[in-house]
Length: 298
Ligand SMILES: NC(=O)c1ccc[n+]([C@@H]2O[C@H](COP(=O)([O-])OP(=O)(O)OC[C@H]3O[C@@H](n4cnc5c(N)ncnc54)[C@H](OP(=O)(O)O)[C@@H]3O)[C@@H](O)[C@H]2O)c1
Image (cartoon, rainbow, N blue to C red; front, side, top):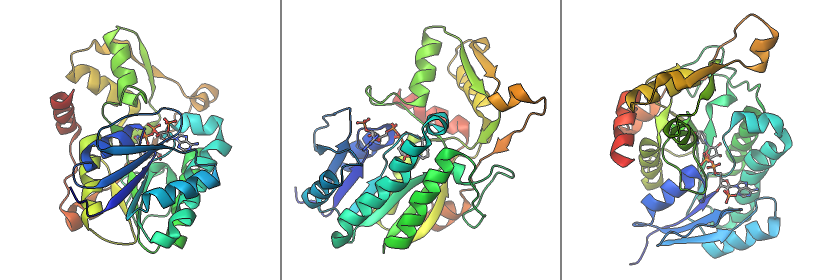
């Protein structure tokens, strides 16, 4: 089969990267990178790449000669980034910069996956035009990546995603896998209640990226999340209820800040997806609908 486009998924062995590779392999020549967890997916060329190794990044750029790059490397875990802010910066700011520099000659479309932590969480329902003011390590690192791509790429999309739910690939365990595994074993799980998000599902995210790959706007920031706003704790409760697990297994964890002060600060990082819905006819789902999709695919 003659493919029209070559797509390089940086972080192809991760949760989102694997779902993308599975979906894109039928219509594109797909190259996907892994760092520590090699994968084999028929129809996808996996290549080892540590983003901090400039020579390797260059070599992979010349192997793939991509028309499109989807940057999905680095964990989205907010607490991991707080513990290792330098590493988060290397992955979310230095990484996209290195890939963008190495592939400049091919002038690819660069799709950078960002998140809602680039906002301060004071108001929620954030639109693309709202002022960014990150206070978390991951938010600062993501903003660095966004700024680099906006400044250097001639053809980019920055897609800010709310937390994504779906099944992992067995090697990179997704957030939802962790929850399911614990609940299956009837183990207690603790979740924070101090952050509100508009959770979305991996199927809607992959569909959105596919649309962006095929066309859609150019040089834009776009938001994509679900329609239901809730805290991590409420999300886990809803999941347990929907999939018939005992809800008492899901308990509320106090953040370090809450332990220090009696004032409970809740940050709302929810995203408003109106722009992408209106311009590209992509639907955001209620959590219940995302759960239905999950059920079909579990
Ligand atoms: N998941 C979400 O809810 C969500 C929401 C918003 C935005 N995003 C963004 O989407 C991207 C992917 O998230 P995800 O949940 O799919 O992450 P993930 O499952 O943790 O996967 C991360 C990927 O990055 C690779 N990686 C880690 N360190 C690397 C390094 N030093 N050099 C090169 N590659 C490296 C991993 O490779 P190995 O596993 O092979 O080591 C893996 O392929 C992230 O940038 C995240 O911020 C995710």
